[in-house]
Image (cartoon, rainbow, N blue to C red; front, side):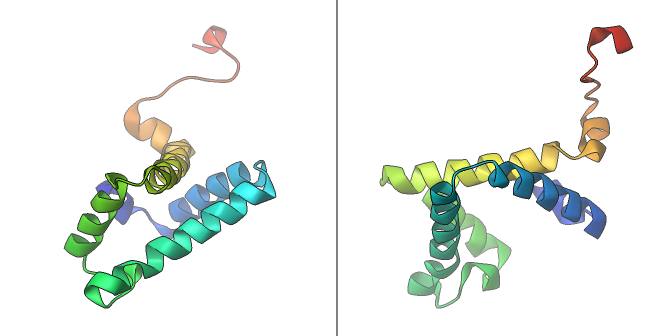
Length: 113
């Protein structure tokens, strides 16, 4: 999601709050699995490039994440897509994103429009 690079700090904070709220509703076991998956993602590139994910240049980081996304091991693919879903939830769940993409739905329904 290249647009996320331009998010100001307050929008990153909003994204994080949305993801944290979504995770708070999940069972502790699932949260532990996600934390473990994030550790694996961070350290796995060390085996190939001698650097952690956060220290890779954008090109290598992208190549690594694309490889995980298409990994033959189903567990890796599921973990990646679950993480991706959380990122999208946080990004598009921000009130500012609704305006950016022209989303005008309201919890009060069609009567508001």
